Image (cartoon, rainbow, N blue to C red; front, side, top):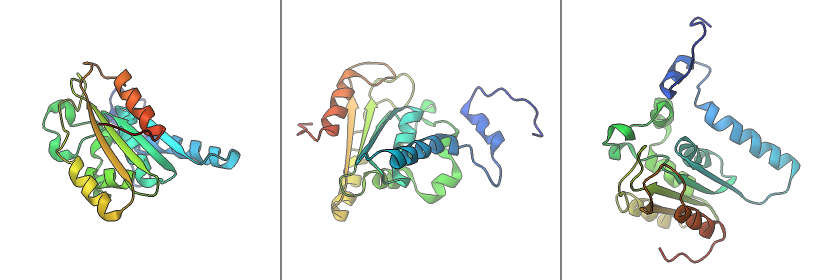
Length: 190
C-alpha cells in the first residue's frame, strides 16, 4: 500500500510484495495446492502428473518436492543447480533464487525430493539450443549423483534428457513423446 500503483513487468518486482507474513512465491504454489485439494475432495484420482516449461517447469520441480500427491513431474527448461548457472540468461527470475526457499533445500536436494517415493518420478528435459535459458548439454553433470542417492533410498526415479531436435523455448514433439512414455510407464531405450 505504501508504494501506490505499480505495473509489474518483471519477476524481479515480486520483491516489492515481500513482507514478514507473505512471500509472492506462493503465487506459484497456491493455485496448484487449491486445485489438488479440490480434485481430492470431489474425485477419486489415484495419480497426479504435473508438466511445465520455464516458470511452469520451475513450479513442476519445486511443488512435487513439498507435496507428494504429485506422482510424476516433468520440467522443461525449468531450473538448474546454482553451480551450473554460468550464463546471464540462466540466473533465473526472482523465485529461482529465493533465499528462504534455498535455506530449506538446494536444487539437487529439491530434485531428489521431487523424485523420491513409491511410484514417484521426476523428469527434467533441457532444450539444448533454447534461446531463453538453460541451454546446452548438462547430461551427466549431476543426474548420476541424484540417481546414486535414489538407489541408496531404494525409492523413486529421476531422469534427465537433452532435446536437440529444435532451437526454440517449447515442449517439442520429441519431448512430448518422452513424457508420454514416462506417463504410460513404457520401456525407455534412452
